[in-house]
Length: 180
Ligand code: NI
Image (cartoon, rainbow, N blue to C red; front, side, top):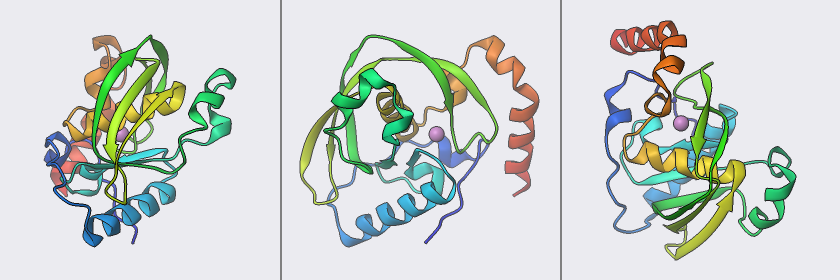
């Protein structure tokens, strides 16, 4: 089922996700719905808050060819789509600065500084605890989605000047959220 994606201005996006105690069929259904919703919205990542939920769940699918050449080999060990339940980033390494967007901020994007490489501990759909290390765009997506689960949004990562340049768009989103 495709779920509507919540945009900036809705309070749910500021909520911290609650840990998933057990990967039940209901959690797996949420994962399926989130994947379907992410693909429908043509995104590369989606967190539970963005579909109005507070489980600690996010989904990611970064196309291999979207990744820079030097990151492809290392990231190839990580199967897509990547489903992260109760994710925790345990290591950050290096720096990258690239354009970043978010389905909750339609038509807004900005160069954002992130770690180049992260290691994330997470539970998969079978309830197995795993560890993955990613670089480049996939690393960026993991950092972005884990931020969502902590109530941290793209706008929080922008500089004051970047925020000023999209102030009108942000205001419009907030106004629309209030009207809903
Ligand atoms: Ni996002």
